[in-house]
Amino acid sequence: MDAIHEVLGRSALVSLTATAIALLLGVPLGTWLALSRLRGRRLMATFVNTGMAVPTVVIGLIVALFLWRSGPLGELELIYTLRGMIIAQILIATPLIAGITMAGLQALPPDLADQLRALGAGRAQLIVRLWLEARVPLLAAAMAGFGHAISEVGAATIVGGNIHGQTQVMTTSIVEQVGRGEFGEALIYAGVLLALAFTINALLTSVQQRAASWARS
Amino acid sequence: MRFRFPLAALIAIAAVGLPACGGDDDGGGTSSPPDRGRMLLATTTSTRDSGLLDELLPRFERQSGCSVKTLAVGSGEAMELGERRDADVLLVHSPEDEEAFMAEGHGASRKAVMHNDFVLLGPPDDPARIRQAADAPDALTRISEQEEPFASRGDDSGTHSKELSLWEAADVEPSGSWYFETGQGMGETLTIADQRQAYTLSDRGTFLATENLDSELLVEGGEDLLNPYHVIAVAGDEVNRECARAFSTWITSPGTQRAIGRFGVAEYGEPLFVPDAEG
Image (cartoon, rainbow over the protein chains, first blue to last red):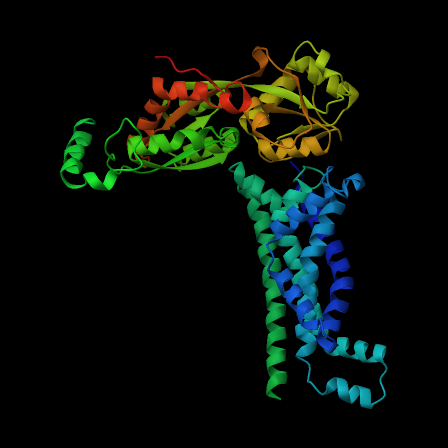
């Protein structure tokens, strides 16, 4: 059995890395979805919303099918590794981050983009300005992506394998501990995950309040 | 006492509800038994993964009127559930723990049901050359000397404790990066061992029932690798004692024992379990 701090550290490492990469993918995607007037935008937004709703265990299964030795990417030997888990969590967090980014930017005052353009802002300046305006929703997107990634168990089990000392994370450890009838350590991880969920939702709530106050003003 | 009530029920059903119970009868029985409530059976992942319970339990439910909920867990947790009286009956394979369980007064009865055996599996090219091993402990010694990957359940299950006792017999303290623990059930561990081209210990039934494995059976036979299952009716007032007793009688009865001996022959060409009950 792993020491508690090892499991905590591993969970944080995997999910923080996955969230960082998911931010690099999800924020531009969400921005494009919010600002673009092109065709296909709707379809893409539907995909993102679907991605937010796909059970993580399904994503785990799909990733595993690719990473198993018999799968198309089997030669990379990523199954039952932290890198494999990071890939799965990127796929889990990216739609969430893109979706919240899109909603956050759309909640900005609708004429803000036009005003900035009138003031002579270039495309890059415009986007940076909008991101700054929407910094709280963007932070919320990052937190939600991280929260979703670190708290899921299905993909972590299938892709990671819960191997002690290598790929065991908080959630897979909880499942295992309860399976052995030992609740002590499981409750510690449960407490950590609860605290995270509370923090993240407090942030999301503050975003909603802010959006509401914009709507009123 | 126990036989009079079904008889009364039978008469009542014959009088009132005969048309209602056509259709899904089990040949022998002509009536539905009285509803005796829910019974929680805690058993090991190996019995579930082999498919034996799926085949047997519907017959028990029809005959006894007990509705069975099965919880497939490691033997360790199964006995925890029994100690907490959360389970009514256990079907487990961890003899030493079972004896302790009985000695502490948690069980009302314990009977031998059947056994299967464990086998050592590994990649087909067998880098540690355990095919040539004299017995299971010798095979494990070879694996540890070559530091070839070995996947352990690491979950306090009956299979895990069997594995540990084999390491003990081999006089090896398994540790190092070649030895890893999955903390999961047998099916999952077989898949992980297969993917990592690692050796592992499995019960024969789960190995035969798990598909898509490249791993091959490398070591089998020998006293060391026997895996006996016992049924334990949990003691205590909170327990559904009637069903627990009925189950433990039923699974050791000649008819069920014959069914156990036949199970898997059609699919795998050999029985997965050998019936053990006396009488």
